[in-house]
Structure formats: C-alpha cells, structure tokens
Image (cartoon, rainbow, N blue to C red; front, side, top):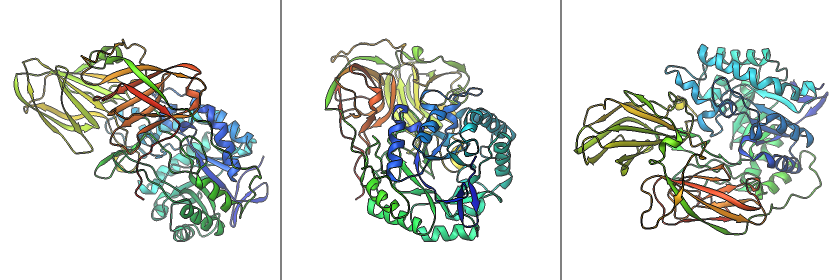
Length: 584
C-alpha cells in the first residue's frame, strides 16, 4: 500500500510527486449528517486533502470511557473523506488548541492537583497512552499504508509555543509507533517556535497567516531539505465575547495562498470550514486577562458556519487552479434556509428552585472545584448559610469564570474573572440566610501556560473575613434537562434569577437557520435536546446556528436557559446570521 514519502525535494506518493492542498474541517464542529456535504465542497474547491483534529476530551468525557458514536464517529468521517477521494491529515493531539475547551485535554486530568500537562509527568503520559490505545485501533485501518486516506499524523501541536522538552515529544512519538502508526509524523509551529517545537527525524511544518516568504525561509533554515509545508495557513480568525467579528478580505488571503503555492509549498488552509462550538465546547485565552471564545467558529472561512460558499471559496478555487487540477463542476449554491418564524416560550422553571433535579450536592468544609466534582463543563452551584444579619462582604480568591451571587434566592451581584473581580458587598436579611453562588465555566484556556485551568470557586472564600464552616457544592452540567418541572409563565410573577424557558416551533420543512436572541441577556439554547451553544447580549454574535438535521417537520421543542432576565418571551428563527460588527 502507498506510504507518503518525505523526499529531499517534496512529498511523493506511489512514487509520484504530491503537493498537499488541504483544508481544515473538524468533524466535531459539524453535524454528522452534514459531513458529506462539506467534504464534497472541499473536493470541488480543488482540495486533495482535509485536516482534522481529534478532541480527546469529547471522546473520553470521563476517565476510562471512550466514545466513537454519533458526532464522534471518526471512522465514518474517514470513510466519507475516502469516498470523495480526499486524503486526510490526522491531528490527534493529545493537545489540539483549536480554540476548544481546554485545548482538547480532558478536565479530569486536573483532578490531580499538581499534574503537569503536556509534560513527562508519568500521570499525564499514562493517560495519553490510554487515550491513544483507545483511539488508534479503530483508526489504523484508515492509514494509507493499509489502503486508507490518512497520509500523515501530527505529533502534539505547536509545542514550541509551550515548552522545549524534546524528551516529551520522543515519548509521544514512541507511543504512536507502539500503537501501530506507520505513516509519517509531522510537527507544526509558528516561525519563531520551530526550533523548540520540533523533533529530529520528524518533518517540521510552519503555521502562519501572513509574511509567507519570511515564514518559509525560517522553516528552510531549521529544515534545510525536505518538503515545505504550511500546516495552518490562517485565512481568518476566531472571535471573543465583547470583541468584534474578525474578517480578512478574500483578495488578501488569496494573494498569500498564491505566494505559498508559487513557492512550491504544500498547504493546509485553516479553516476551510470552521463550524460551531456547540454546547459548552468553546475555549478561551488568558494572557493576563481571561477572554472566552464565542460559539460560532465561522472563522471567515471559504465555507461559512452554515456550510455555504463565500467569496474566499471562489478566490481560492481560482488560485488553486493555477497549480493543480480543479473539478469542472460548478461551485455549489447555498443550501435552503428557514423562513422567519417565531416561537413563544410559555413555560418556565427556575434553576435555584429545581437545583436538586439537576445535580447532587457534595457537602464539604470548602467549595469543591468542578474537577473535584467530576464535572467538565456547565455550571456549579455553591451554597452556605450566612452567619449573621446585616452588612456582608464576600471575598473569593479566584472566580472561574463568572459568578452570580444570590441571598435567599434574590440576586445581589456578579463577579467576573475577565474583570479581575473578587469582592462583593451585600446585605444579609437574617442569620442563616442562604448564600448561593452560581459559577459558569465559560471555557477552559486552550493556549499557553494558563491551561491548568480549574473551574468553580478556587482558594479561600470568606464572608466578613471568615470562612463559612461548610458548603454544598452541586455540579450542574445541564446535559440532561428531562427532570425539570415546567409551569406556565405568569407575567405578574416572572421567575427571579436564572431560569429555563420552553416553547415550541412549527416547521413545515427543516432547513438551516439561526436563532435570534434579541431581548435576551445570557445563557444557552437547546432545540430538540440538541445544545446549540451560548448566547450573550454583549456580542459580537447575536444569533446561533441551527443545523437542518436538528429540526423536524412539525413540532420542535426549544429551551432557553436565561441567566439574568429578558425583555421578551419570544425567540425568532430566521435564514440569516448576525455574527456582529467588523473592524472594517
């Protein structure tokens, strides 16, 4: 069977020269019923390869578990890629960055208080070995050496931006070999990190978005012979809450793509199709200030979040055609979209009133982190009795990441990690009043040294300078809402504090759409139990993508978890997105 050859003058496959023209397409960010459509559009743009990460934390949500079902059916995705005649670059991590929750590393690793991630820590390496031992057996038949589409496998990910321990990379390479990977390995790093992030005997590749000539020159300096390859050619960018929607002109990105291909380089366009951070899966950055990433991973890519072609698709197709064959079939047109329709949410359920239906509390002398509670994403509720009536000052050493504070169910304030807030003053109405602190994990840091990002209330928590004697810590992952008891909404007595609101939509014909949350403040949306993701009125995005396969002809249930309050009882489904203002 053919094996990708790394020759002095480039790649070869079946003893013929091969230029890899690839695009990023993460199966876990796309509804599985839409994989085939996105892969077909990749081929029609002129790509001969697709790249995907593998999110360890989704496949192994708890230690000892491993999932390859539904939207995590990687073998099915590989079958579909092969059916389109596409090669695959597989990037299994264990760390993937990807603006993804914790960079793909499972949160349960952080239950060990002093574990060192991305290192030779034996506890970490043991967990990585178990992960690869579960992932690779069903993937090995898809290696090109076994007749499958996978040409090469990436070793770690941008390690040079994090560390410089070549022994760690050697350990990972040995694991991949021992578990049966016999296709070439490669590393990827930004130009300034190439020396630190590489491993002798493993192909180095470069990540960049501009200054193509300088980046390729640095790669050639560090690797005097062998293929030139840009493993991440950034043609857009991700957005953060409170920022603008980042865009890059098609002409500018296409010009740099042309420079890469004119230099004889292979390329992976990051992203070809970004997709969506469904549910609670977005990551965050923290370079002194915590910045969570938004739900949409549109990335201003050749295919937009709904999988429709953009001006970049046409521009890139024209560039690729100068260097490689491009199918003669015309570029696909946009998929059908929903006509505007409105749903009234007529039932509600208060979170604080029904907390016992959502999770079991752990009683301890101090708040427990989410990791100690065995929880990955969602919320945690911390409760204790206040020792006295009167003025009170709550001080929390570390809020990870956003805390709503209630006294006897009444909201008294919010503390945000992003704003470096630790202290809140309020009035306790009586001795023994219930102090409730609802903490949202807004996304674990996915890049840099801040990745040891435990969630919940960390460190000492005091009221008027003294630590309460006991706490109830309750995990609220919100992964199962079936136990909630809804009642009819009463305009004269709306729910106080965070609440679930439910209604239904009648759809004649399912199609892609977008939920508009005008009038709502902050929370999550589900349609037919599918978690669409977070919304937040601070923007930039004000709509959430609804994949057509989520909908049914006829009756569709919609649930909105609103953390603060809304000025409306309705949500709108429509055919166009609003990702927010741009800087242009």
